[in-house]
Amino acid sequence: MTIRAVILSGGSGTRLWPASRETFPKQLLPLTGERSLLQETAARLDGFSGELDPRLLVASNEEYRFIIAEQLRQSGVNDASIILEPVGRNTAPALTLAALTANGEGDDPILLVMPADHMIADRAAFQQAIAEGMRQAEAGGLVCFGIVPERAETGYGYILGGEALAGSAARELAEFVEKPDAAAAARYLASGVYFWNSGIFMFRASVWLAALAHFRPDIDAACRAAYAGRKADADFVRVERAAFEGCPSDSIDYAVMEKLHSAPRLGRGVVVPLSAGWSDVGSWDALWAVSKRDADGNAAYGDVLLHDSRDTLVYASHRLVAAVGCQDMVVVETADAVLAVPKSRAQDVKKVVERLKAEGRSHGRFHRKVFRPWGWYDSLDGGDRFQVKRIVVNPGASLSLQMHHHRAEHWIVVKGTAEVSRGDEVFLLSENESTYIPLGITHRLFNPGLLPLEIIEVQSGAYLGEDDIVRFEDRYGRLQEQT
Image (cartoon, rainbow, N blue to C red; front, side, top):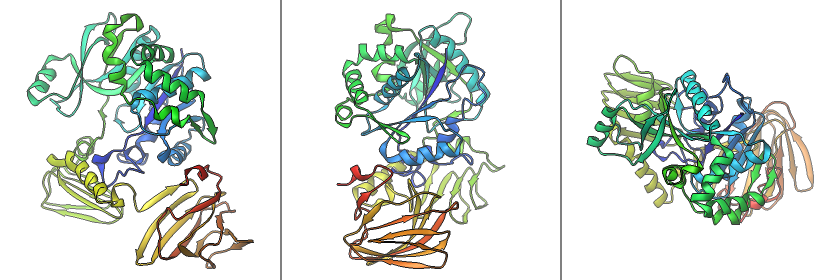
């Protein structure tokens, strides 16, 4: 039987601010190496000895669609279906859309369901556990992967393993347990039969759909209606918005897995132990725990100087960061924000994000560098009635045909060739040439070359917000997003 990988990529990662933002969350970041967590997840089955469907399924939201598609393309994944959720409804509806897609495109494959934002250090051990999970799923089991605990952790939910299955390291699924206090976590660790809940699952698509229809027929009906109204849009599958907005929100655990004991005919719940250097990288102290550290216990990313510091994480993304006399600290630098927090308080970073939102500040939602389907822009400077951006347009890519009510723009080409549409004119600009786009004039920027086009844009006007864009034509389907 064939395995088909499903990646759930809808999380926001607020505890990893300021590196992770609402529009560019942790799964899109290269936190532990050159590749993002999403790219690492997509490569997790490379070299797997079992039968594997190369068509990846990714469930995500509208916000991340273009950068997910680009990161997969950069990783050599050219056959992925990206299912777009119009609104967030947790993991059970997201998985259900993927299962309906898989059943519609194949012969009831085994789904390997993986969060996009986890780290697994030992790929061989992971694939060995997946092979065991496949055997259990082939027999009709609904499999969850339990992380063999390394410490009495209070920040994770647990899974209680029941009776050992003959000829296997797997156990029957006895119970899901909420995050424990310190005393209970110590008991769980000592028992040898409790595991951390990894959020990784495996079962046949039809088995999941049957179980969901039994336990949560409301979610099943809403997802089927949304899927029936789907439309293809370039690399994406858009489900029907109104039907999905009416879908209840629930997790895979709560919707089905925790209830299996009450309906054994639907399939046996199974726990497969997994010991593969797993981390959910859910906070900065978690990243420190899985990082390579020096003799003083320090972990450093980027251009970092450490002096007389111990057990400290410094994450520098844009400039030199020096730390002197720090102990058990986290220091994170990005282009527009710096975080300093004791490791013991790392979970409280999400409170900073909550405050930023409450105050209407953009730092919780956007990076200074913002990715678009055509490339990206970086806001270099700004003040009263002006803003300066560096804009990079990918080869063959084009901004929408648009106009602005409140601002004019000056464009200066610093690299490549630009094809400019301005009103009724169409002309080329080369390096060191510039043009002016008056307020209210329709315009478009296109890169006809084989190399990235780079321009400096100077905006001037009474209002410079990104919502002052009226689109008339757009190859990326964004006309429907205008309000």
